[in-house]
Length: 115
Length: 107
Image (cartoon, rainbow over all chains, first blue to last red; front, side):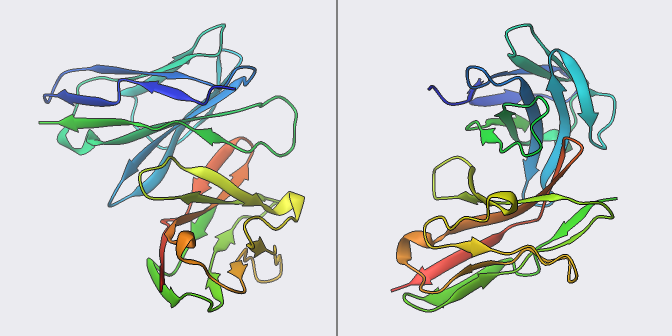
């Protein structure tokens, strides 16, 4: 099975711009979660999508949004970029559903730099 | 609110020595706990989860609900164990990760 893929791998944007990141989960996985990883804050949960619906949300401002398509692919959007949004954005997929235990499979990440 | 604490940012041991990476959590319900590992230039990957009670690459972790801990242990560390280790708590679909511990195994 192909692993989780994320595009683009690297991105440079300027303050005030908006950005869209893409994640393709493992085939058959219905749950996609997004994380922000920074040296200062570590790995922080952004949100989780399951069957095209946002099922869980972390403590991030409304500038961070996402969506999931019928093929389980997911996109994350950040509007009005700030310098502090510079981070590695990780996507993880899992089978989801009603399984009590859902181990996550991570993508390589998108490195976003805001200047 | 759920919280995961890994008290050691850095841990260094010699090859063949025992190693223990500490993880404490705070959560009022019955959490699912995981250890993830990130080797140099590789993506984050699952090492083990408490529900399966298995040993992976010689590592084990026991959930201690009384002490709210999920420490990762290996009796004899190997150089290839050098990596970043994250403890994570999953509850209601939301994952909370600790800040991670960088383990270095010296020859």
